[in-house]
Amino acid sequence: MNGRARPSSSRQRHWLGFMLLGVVLLAVPFVAALGGQAWVRIANFAILYVFLALGLNIVVGYAGLLDLGYVAFYAVGAYTYALLASPHFGIHLPFWVILPLGAGLACIFGVLLGAPTLKLRGDYLAIVTLGFGEIVRIFMNNLNAPVNITNGAQGITLIDPIRIGDFSFAQTSSFLGVTLSGPQKYYFLLVALALLVIMVNIRLQDSRIGRAWQAIREDEVAAKACGINTRNIKLLAFAMGASFGGIAGGVFSAMQGFVSPESFSLMESITILAMVVLGGMGHIPGVILGAILLTGLPEALRYGIEPLQRALFGRMIVDPESLRMLVFGLALVLVMRFRPAGLWPSSQRRRELAESAG
Image (cartoon, rainbow, N blue to C red; front, side, top):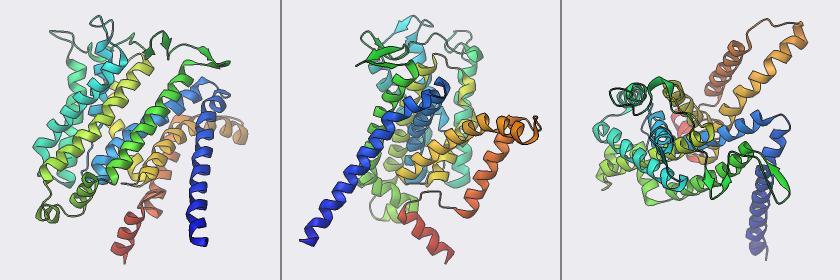
């Protein structure tokens, strides 16, 4: 009887946890709106970075391939949406056509990046992928002559928002007596897409492909000796990770209504990589936590440092932007010093670090 009761109580706890999480997710946009729509937009960007971090986690966390050019796939998805849903070329395709197309193009770019780098590891792979990311950004910055494709540094404006029939995600509307602003509607769309991405990640992690990625990460020579086609498996990691970046880029383009090459700098790639490492490489909940913290913490510091200085000293002593980045950087250094596996590492990663330390 006790053996039967335990699984039942465990299932009940799981369902209770899911219900509480659902209530929190539903409440976030309304609670954030109390502080202004800016906080709802910050919540939206936190979920968008969850997309990007989970995509990079496939390449870095599962397959162990250090990628510093991941933002290139983000740019490909964003510009695909911008070019096919704006007055720039006079094309206005629906989002359900453009998002899969952007994901597919990002996959192709992922394979193009992965194919020449199959024999590279570590620092050498990082340098090549960094160069790839910068090449894509520079191309976007200069493809405005002799044929104006990307409009150069000025970017593309008046991009169509996501629409389902007459329902636009950019406009305020009422639904079942509840008034939802544009950012709040985008929030629920992003949550739905994020849940789908998380489900795909969980399935990949426990699949034969996921185990093959982990085998390559641990020892590529041994994985090849076991019969794993390391070439195809590594290319698949680049392609799958890139597809998530392409989807995130398309949604970013629709939300902002404007894209330019400045949005896809090297700093973006480094930030996304920091989210994966800080949360815990290869561990989905840890990566999600890292993305949320690294998106929300700098913004909280931005809004909190100035009032704190005025309350303590009666005036501004240090520029809030400089102090914000100083505190943010110090926090990252301390975490990496005392939690090298990340804030929420997987049990396997924790054991590996304990064995190496011992």
